Image 1 (cartoon, rainbow, N blue to C red):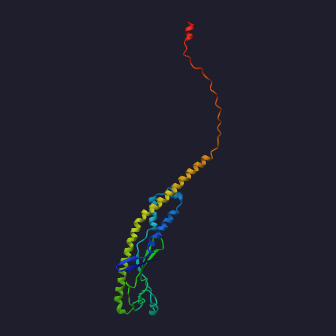
Image 2 (cartoon, rainbow, N blue to C red; image 1 turned 60 degrees about the vertical axis):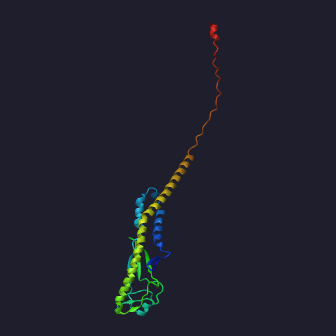
Image 3 (cartoon, rainbow, N blue to C red; image 1 turned 180 degrees about the horizontal axis):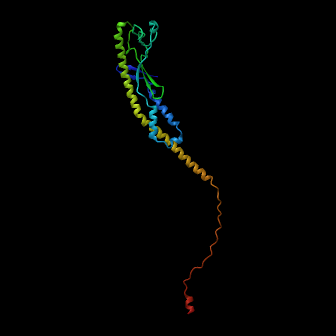
Length: 237
């Protein structure tokens, strides 16, 4: 679970929040790595990348309140959470004072189609940003409502900020998946090319050996050189 905290006016991410995007990306990379090589060799990069995007995109965050019924005031006080009791005559916000640590009053969650919970972001408040008093009076109901709305507005801004990053990730996901598939495809094709060359070489070595007989070279018969002597013609006359 990723943790976000609030600085004055600026939401700050923890050191581990990048894992929120690394997890689906690493799963996508593992899926490509495990794709059979015979399929990768001839697959359509664009079609396969589109299917990967639909599987590993991150859905925008939605907000929900954690509501638990509190019947015992003292037992509830021992819990470091904010509770809202709608069944009782009293509307109670329960929180340790002085406040220290984090509370799960509001959570933002991302659900992926076809799967269960894909990931969750827990909103963490620090003592400087969230100072609540224990309310145990019906007359304070308006204050309780306004305080809940204030927290909801803060979290809404935080979730909107998170969703902008999610949108940027989803927009880059197609390019990332295409690069992954293209790289793996080139690896498989190069491997197949080397295998084909090796197989051709081995097949050449396996061809039957045909001995070649080299006949001895015969000596050439000397041919007398032509004579330019025309004396024989004179003798004939």
